[in-house]
Length: 444
Image (tube, rainbow, N blue to C red):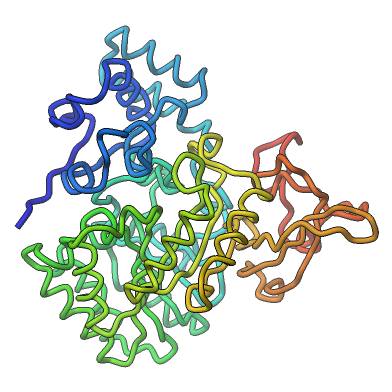
């Protein structure tokens, strides 16, 4: 049985694999970037998932260890200068927070538009963007077994409390659901809910089950634990209790969906993850998989085809291919919309119909989840064809719309409406602020 060991800025230089392979410059880069963007990995990731003989190009190394390019040059110099000047921890935090606030810490209107109120109380642990689905952030689950370097929820982990989503009160959770019978799905997210002890997580699950909400059909659990610490479902001291809790949910007639984040097929190679997957599926839960497409990690159609096919073989359901969100180190990870579409299409062509449950490439933007259907030519004009997979207004879902072709576009606010139109159809209700215009990127 392997005990979990967190690896952070405090102890990463003491880990043999890291100390033996990385240069002084690379160790310093980790310190600089890790003082701005969150850094944590663990002994399972380091010992079983990373090929240290080729670590500089290893996808899991880049996925979990800060890289110099993840900060723009001016931000890197600012933090490096502070560290070399032996700034105090308080001074480093001031520098870091200044940089963080320039990285669009909460994209897509998360703070302004997604947080509901209940009888005048702002529910900071809930996001309700789409009619049927509500996100819940249990306060004890707002960390992870390891942090992804691309994570769009990085503000959850850097100590900026005013930017953090979290809530402990199950009474508010149940009361909000009672007042919103259109909600059929609750997604536990974070952070990672699977970081919690089973007895703690059970208090949230039991509150939902005991409330006997007839409109609540599905409980989802967003987690990276299968990739970063599969022992959570196998050998952790309360792993069996967790699986019994899953069985309890399924036994009440609720659909239980584990929303598993896998970013590269290398995460599927160990005996631990295979056993964890088997044990979860034996409870009656379904495992659906998702990931953004990212430069340096998985921007290759063969990687995606291999990953989807392996997931199907293991009994999982490929669900989403996302685009890197417009926050944090997007400049380092993002691929263009056209390239993402080609990666998706070429990978989709390589797999059987059982793996073609996956949808994408999708942007989780302010107005909703926007899918890039492809590059088309209409009346001699080259355009992007897009549609909503989810929308703030449910009437938007499934409606195709068109944008001028832009080979450099990486996000929705890079795009302009095609055919000379001033705005996209949804902008009557939800205007977007395009890059290059005055004001903050995001919404008006």
